[in-house]
Length: 170
Image (cartoon, rainbow, N blue to C red; front, side):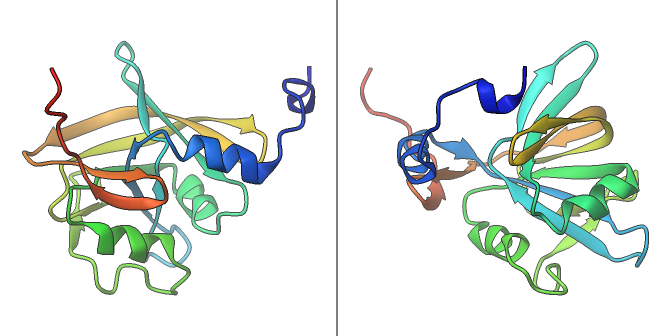
């Protein structure tokens, strides 16, 4: 069965209007371009745990991304879980600048992938599988190493970036 037959035609604007009601965390997917040796990265709001045994994570990236092919070719990347206040990092890595890392603090992970300073955690991964996801590629990755820090997450909701507020309702 092809992806086109899985659901009826839904207007993209209507799809976006409904889905924007679901908040997501914001993650930076970063690697080193194997051709240039320079850091490359992108932002996803679709990052999630997939399996504990084996340790797998997943996210999707648009097929029009110019950064994903570089990351995919490298075979490995680091996921930085962005913290509240890192909107500037999100904007820089979402942009089209030649050097997205010019104004971002980062260091190499133990496996040599760029990880963003001040993030809530980082996860070094290797690409396990890339699957057809319509106008996106669904990436499944094997977790190689990870660390966490304290703080509040950067959240994307309703077209806006911000922090998480705990509900006062019981």
